[in-house]
Length: 205
Image (cartoon, rainbow, N blue to C red; front, top):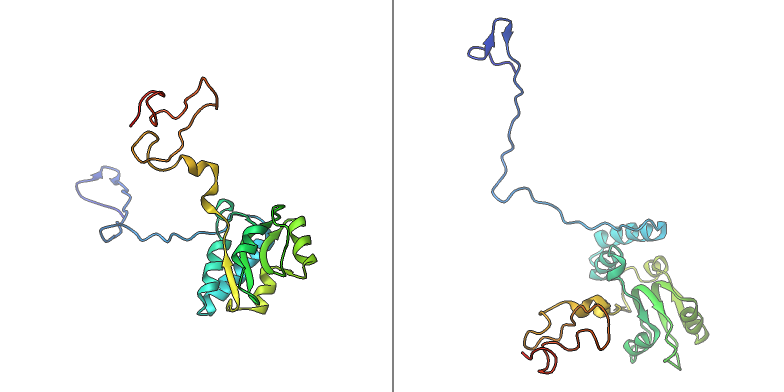
């Protein structure tokens, strides 16, 4: 736009940029907090596509949860050991265990019952033991064909909070009733040993 009059010169009016504002309601624009899978694994990307379709076109909450978990970061898809799998599937005959993550072997589990398990990945030893016991290891595309609504399944998850880093989160170490581990450079006589927990170690709260 050209503004004439007061802004004019001998050679003519000065060109001024004219930008229009946006009428935004108090609180600003609504941002969609959509999480997309960051992995470049083509199989995982295809699974996300498949379960996004199933979550949208079916009323099954199972599919919505699976889609959400497939989109999660690796940290939020912790592995589940074979011993935990056996424990959780006890008394659930005829049902299929579904784990959005890796199923790992556990040498502490001596006997493996017949299990039907669907997971993103199996370690070689875990797969061999499940198959040897007469069980079945499935992928999520097979599960979508066999049970598109998630009927007859038990949805399981690995221990999300069992990372070493989680020990340091929470109330500050030394505060009353805190079980949070302090960040100590090293373990040993010369380094912090239960400081704030007893009188002989600095102080007791």
